[in-house]
Image (cartoon, rainbow, N blue to C red; front, side, top):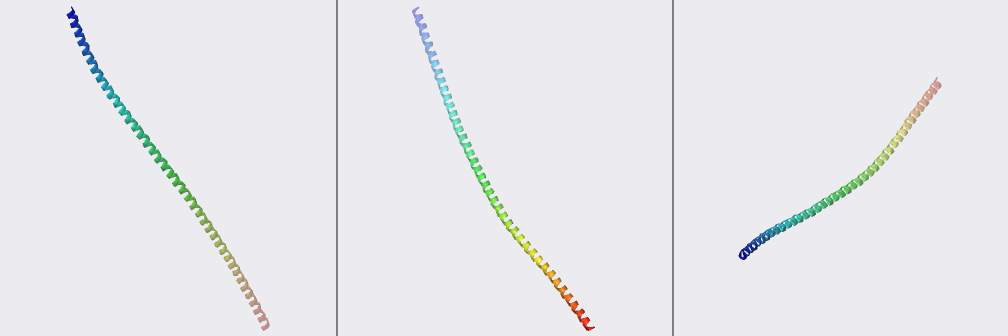
Length: 146
Protein backbone atom coordinates (compact mmCIF):
# COMPACT_ATOMS: atom_id res chain seq x y z
CA UNK A 1 0.00 0.00 0.00
CA UNK A 2 2.87 2.25 0.74
CA UNK A 3 4.33 1.62 -2.64
CA UNK A 4 0.99 2.45 -4.22
CA UNK A 5 0.81 5.66 -2.23
CA UNK A 6 4.40 6.50 -3.14
CA UNK A 7 3.70 5.64 -6.75
CA UNK A 8 0.53 7.74 -6.67
CA UNK A 9 2.46 10.59 -4.99
CA UNK A 10 5.19 10.34 -7.63
CA UNK A 11 2.62 10.38 -10.40
CA UNK A 12 0.86 13.35 -8.78
CA UNK A 13 4.23 15.06 -8.35
CA UNK A 14 5.02 14.33 -12.01
CA UNK A 15 1.59 15.61 -13.10
CA UNK A 16 1.95 18.76 -10.99
CA UNK A 17 5.43 19.39 -12.44
CA UNK A 18 4.08 18.98 -15.98
CA UNK A 19 1.17 21.30 -15.19
CA UNK A 20 3.62 23.84 -13.66
CA UNK A 21 5.85 23.70 -16.74
CA UNK A 22 2.83 23.95 -19.03
CA UNK A 23 1.50 26.95 -17.02
CA UNK A 24 4.95 28.57 -17.04
CA UNK A 25 5.17 28.13 -20.81
CA UNK A 26 1.67 29.58 -21.24
CA UNK A 27 2.49 32.41 -18.85
CA UNK A 28 5.78 33.12 -20.64
CA UNK A 29 4.06 33.08 -24.04
CA UNK A 30 1.20 35.26 -22.71
CA UNK A 31 3.69 37.65 -21.17
CA UNK A 32 5.66 37.83 -24.44
CA UNK A 33 2.44 38.42 -26.40
CA UNK A 34 1.27 41.05 -23.92
CA UNK A 35 4.68 42.76 -23.98
CA UNK A 36 4.66 42.68 -27.78
CA UNK A 37 1.14 44.14 -27.87
CA UNK A 38 2.13 46.83 -25.34
CA UNK A 39 5.19 47.81 -27.43
CA UNK A 40 3.10 47.78 -30.61
CA UNK A 41 0.49 49.98 -28.93
CA UNK A 42 3.21 52.32 -27.65
CA UNK A 43 4.68 52.50 -31.18
CA UNK A 44 1.24 53.28 -32.64
CA UNK A 45 0.73 55.91 -29.92
CA UNK A 46 4.16 57.41 -30.67
CA UNK A 47 3.39 57.49 -34.39
CA UNK A 48 -0.05 59.00 -33.66
CA UNK A 49 1.59 61.65 -31.48
CA UNK A 50 4.10 62.39 -34.21
CA UNK A 51 1.26 62.65 -36.70
CA UNK A 52 -0.65 64.97 -34.36
CA UNK A 53 2.47 67.11 -33.98
CA UNK A 54 2.90 67.12 -37.76
CA UNK A 55 -0.74 68.12 -38.25
CA UNK A 56 -0.47 70.91 -35.69
CA UNK A 57 2.72 72.15 -37.34
CA UNK A 58 1.25 71.83 -40.83
CA UNK A 59 -1.93 73.71 -39.98
CA UNK A 60 0.01 76.33 -38.00
CA UNK A 61 2.16 76.85 -41.10
CA UNK A 62 -0.95 77.07 -43.29
CA UNK A 63 -2.55 79.54 -40.84
CA UNK A 64 0.63 81.65 -40.75
CA UNK A 65 0.85 81.58 -44.55
CA UNK A 66 -2.80 82.59 -44.89
CA UNK A 67 -2.30 85.36 -42.30
CA UNK A 68 0.77 86.64 -44.15
CA UNK A 69 -1.10 86.51 -47.45
CA UNK A 70 -4.08 88.34 -45.92
CA UNK A 71 -1.73 91.02 -44.56
CA UNK A 72 -0.07 91.33 -47.98
CA UNK A 73 -3.45 91.64 -49.69
CA UNK A 74 -4.60 94.24 -47.14
CA UNK A 75 -1.35 96.18 -47.56
CA UNK A 76 -1.67 96.04 -51.37
CA UNK A 77 -5.32 97.14 -51.12
CA UNK A 78 -4.33 100.07 -48.89
CA UNK A 79 -1.54 101.04 -51.31
CA UNK A 80 -3.94 100.80 -54.25
CA UNK A 81 -6.53 102.87 -52.37
CA UNK A 82 -3.86 105.48 -51.57
CA UNK A 83 -2.71 105.52 -55.19
CA UNK A 84 -6.30 105.89 -56.43
CA UNK A 85 -6.90 108.77 -54.01
CA UNK A 86 -3.70 110.48 -55.18
CA UNK A 87 -4.69 109.97 -58.83
CA UNK A 88 -8.17 111.30 -58.07
CA UNK A 89 -6.74 114.41 -56.40
CA UNK A 90 -4.29 114.91 -59.26
CA UNK A 91 -7.05 114.55 -61.85
CA UNK A 92 -9.26 116.95 -59.90
CA UNK A 93 -6.42 119.49 -59.83
CA UNK A 94 -5.80 119.06 -63.59
CA UNK A 95 -9.52 119.28 -64.29
CA UNK A 96 -9.89 122.39 -62.10
CA UNK A 97 -6.90 124.04 -63.77
CA UNK A 98 -8.18 123.08 -67.22
CA UNK A 99 -11.64 124.38 -66.36
CA UNK A 100 -10.17 127.62 -65.06
CA UNK A 101 -8.03 127.99 -68.21
CA UNK A 102 -10.98 127.19 -70.46
CA UNK A 103 -13.22 129.61 -68.57
CA UNK A 104 -10.55 132.31 -68.81
CA UNK A 105 -10.16 131.72 -72.56
CA UNK A 106 -13.95 131.81 -73.04
CA UNK A 107 -14.23 135.10 -71.18
CA UNK A 108 -11.27 136.52 -73.11
CA UNK A 109 -12.87 135.44 -76.39
CA UNK A 110 -16.20 136.93 -75.33
CA UNK A 111 -14.44 140.19 -74.43
CA UNK A 112 -12.68 140.26 -77.83
CA UNK A 113 -16.01 139.52 -79.54
CA UNK A 114 -17.71 142.31 -77.54
CA UNK A 115 -14.94 144.75 -78.42
CA UNK A 116 -15.09 143.68 -82.08
CA UNK A 117 -18.86 144.20 -82.10
CA UNK A 118 -18.41 147.61 -80.55
CA UNK A 119 -15.78 148.40 -83.19
CA UNK A 120 -18.16 147.21 -85.94
CA UNK A 121 -20.90 149.41 -84.51
CA UNK A 122 -18.44 152.29 -84.30
CA UNK A 123 -17.38 151.75 -87.93
CA UNK A 124 -21.00 151.59 -89.13
CA UNK A 125 -21.83 154.70 -87.18
CA UNK A 126 -18.65 156.48 -88.36
CA UNK A 127 -19.23 155.65 -92.03
CA UNK A 128 -22.92 156.48 -91.73
CA UNK A 129 -21.94 159.84 -90.25
CA UNK A 130 -19.38 160.38 -93.05
CA UNK A 131 -21.98 159.42 -95.65
CA UNK A 132 -24.54 161.76 -94.08
CA UNK A 133 -21.94 164.53 -93.90
CA UNK A 134 -20.91 163.95 -97.53
CA UNK A 135 -24.58 163.94 -98.57
CA UNK A 136 -25.22 167.23 -96.76
CA UNK A 137 -22.10 168.74 -98.31
CA UNK A 138 -23.22 167.68 -101.78
CA UNK A 139 -26.67 169.11 -101.18
CA UNK A 140 -25.10 172.35 -100.01
CA UNK A 141 -22.77 172.46 -103.02
CA UNK A 142 -25.76 171.81 -105.35
CA UNK A 143 -27.76 174.59 -103.68
CA UNK A 144 -24.88 177.04 -104.04
CA UNK A 145 -24.31 175.95 -107.59
CA UNK A 146 -27.90 176.53 -108.59
